[in-house]
Amino acid sequence: MVSNNESIELTLRERVAVVTLRHDIDLEDADEVTEVFRRACTDSLTAATLLDLSELDFADSTLLNLILRAKAEHDEAHRPFVPAVAAGSAVERLFDITGVTDVLGSTRSYEEALRRVKTLTA
Image (cartoon, rainbow, N blue to C red):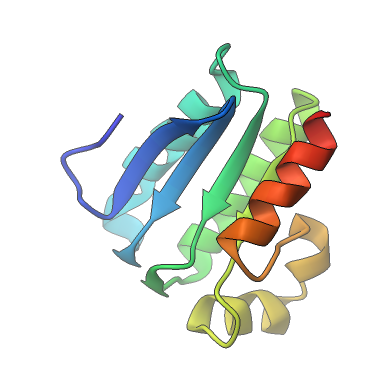
């Protein structure tokens, strides 16, 4: 599923729902991001969700809140949720400053996140 917004994408890869957020995501995108997270969490063809933030240039507290809610919903559904954050990015700094890096179990690359998802779903 590709939305009308080129910054938000949901694709399937080997039984993994991959949510990709690119460029800038802010309050205007909140409803669409929430919908994509919900679809990823409830997709019966997949076993986990990988959140790819490696191409995201900007994230604020609104997006951080949406990600934390998505993580909680995935946890309730007993479904792995693994964010991939580019090392040295503004998103990584936001996660570190707010102390959510460990809570989210974020990785520093898409490849590392995919390996973790495969381990969690094996």
